[in-house]
Length: 372
Image 1 (spheres, rainbow, N blue to C red):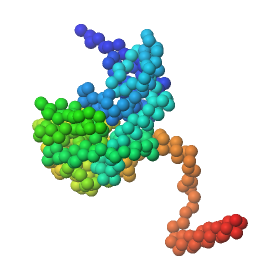
Image 2 (cartoon, rainbow, N blue to C red):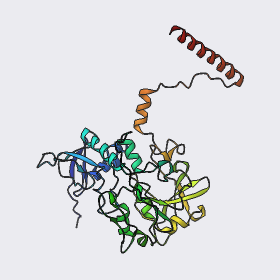
Image 3 (cartoon, one colour):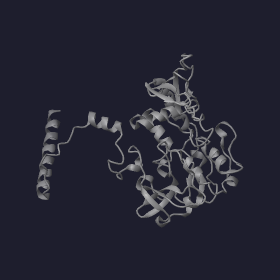
Image 4 (cartoon, rainbow, N blue to C red):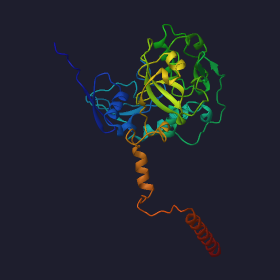
């Protein structure tokens, strides 16, 4: 008997038509467009709490709000308010506006400001710097100024096991670690306690962290609230080089990313997809105990986005492409350099030319002063 495929739904996202299966969310539809054409990656709404591998995640941070200009072909009326794209399912004929709608972009700036109200400005000492989703979100949609004048909330650092430390002051309450614990433990005994500005990850997490997959809460955290104690303060991420590797492990898939500083493996993480999400959780033995190259089979360099600081001075053009924005900026603001020009390499000649150029500059300055 032939398998009956579900009828696809056609929607329009920022002027681009895409067909998806019933039950698909607006976020997933936007990602499908970007996966088919990487140049459209900027159209995808940001996600701070949504995490596809974690069921029921999303709908908490409001970073992915979009405007539905037409609800469906049957009812083309626009939705009265902006909706979270990560939990809103598509309808036939739906028209969605994201980057093309000024109200969405203005609201996104307000969301950034709200998330940064209590977030400490400790990027210079935070190990998540350089691969922090909140950094990227605030850089793309935030403001350089803050209107907040009250004291920021503070919490004591908590060791939630031998390998993980909790910095509750950095937490944005995305619930990702809670949903991860639901998957990796039989009986979760921690979560978000209290309400409002008193909300926090309960210290009862110390009881739930004693399992073979507890280190995965580090990978899913979008900020530096949960950090690897074996990696803390060892190196900035842009000074390290990621390599894909695997091993035979009886607990997990054994597929990881090794982070090198020179010949030393300074940390091991699970592999992430183009959206920064872990598809396969890894065990603590692979993450914290196997820190030698001889423990792994190296597959090759990890593919990293050119816009990421991790890629700085490490990858050739055939592995990663320059972002379209930087090319447009260079074309409009910088003059092309003619490589066919003659240039001087003789040190003595360079020294004399430098003296002459300084004299000319001083002479021009004197003329300007006399005219004034």
